Length: 132
Image (cartoon, rainbow, N blue to C red):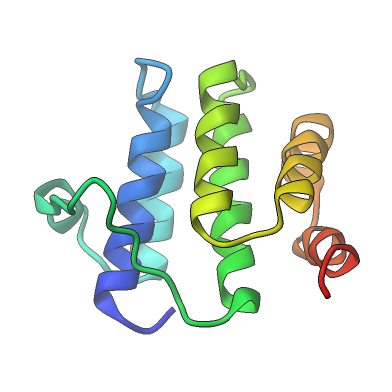
């Protein structure tokens, strides 16, 4: 992810997922801060970022999008509770990201089962299984 708008969009989606269940836990906030630091984005910029509700700025290739989806699913489980609304949010985001619906569903199930021990390579394998 190179473009600042892509980074802001991703961090914004992480934040939206974190508050989906009505509670922004300290561990969720720490996860988002860590990602923001890696992306060299100040969280204040994310707080000011107000995209159009239908606007999602993504990298131009699927192999760059899959890690973004992986981060979303990790965040969903980081507080050890994956609510139905969080699962639905991740599913809808995966679809909006242009990812294969079955791969999205399988990834959500795997991340709920294995949590943070699920490797990026395992996620990539799931998406490769469903690619054309």
